[in-house]
Image (cartoon, rainbow, N blue to C red):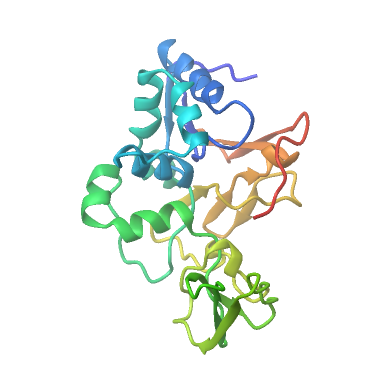
Length: 267
C-alpha cells in the first residue's frame, strides 16, 4: 500500500491508459492522490502520445478512444495529457521517460511536450516508442501488396525473422536494404540480434528509469549499467514494479504480483 509522507513524490513511467480494463479508474486514482495534496507526476507514454495526437484531429477518435474519453472527466483528461516527455530527478542523478533514446543523441528533445511536438516531433515520438535498435547485417524491406495493387505497411525485417503472409490474392515485395547501425525499430521489426537500447546507453543523461518494454520473464526491475526497466508486464499477469529513491540510500525495489492476466501479450 502506498503511504506517502511529506516530501514524497510518486512518478509513473507512462502508459496509464489502454493497459487493462479500467484506464479511467487508473487516472482517477492518481488524480485523487493529487487532490489529497500528494505530489504525483507521470511522463507521456506512447498511448498518451497517441491520444494527444487524436484530440487535435477532427473525427480523430476510433470507438475505443471515444469510449475512453467519455469515461473520463475533463479535469482527469487534461491532467493525463498535460505531462512532460521526460522528467529529471536531479537529486538522484536520474531521469524518467517511457520508451528510450538512441545512443547517437547528444541532447534530448524538450521535456515540455508542446515544445517538443512543435520543434522536434520525430525524436519526441522516439522517446515514447523506442525499444530495440538495429544490429549489424542486412535487412529485408517487406511490403504487403493487396490484390488491387494497394501497398500496405512495410517492415524492415532481420534475416532471422519470418516473412509475413501475403494478403489474399496479393503479393509480397522483398528488397534487401542496409540500415544505419542502431536505428529505431518497430515492434514487429525486432530480430534476435537487435539490442535493447539501454545496453548501448552510456549514462550521459543520468540514470534512466523507463517503461514500455515488458520484461515478462523477470520478477524485479531490470538493471542495466545506466538504466532500469520497470515494466514487468503487470497487465499480462506479471508484476507491478517500482523503485524507491531516497537521498543517501541505495535504491530499493518493490514488486506486487498481478492478481490475474488482464490482456495477452502480442501484436
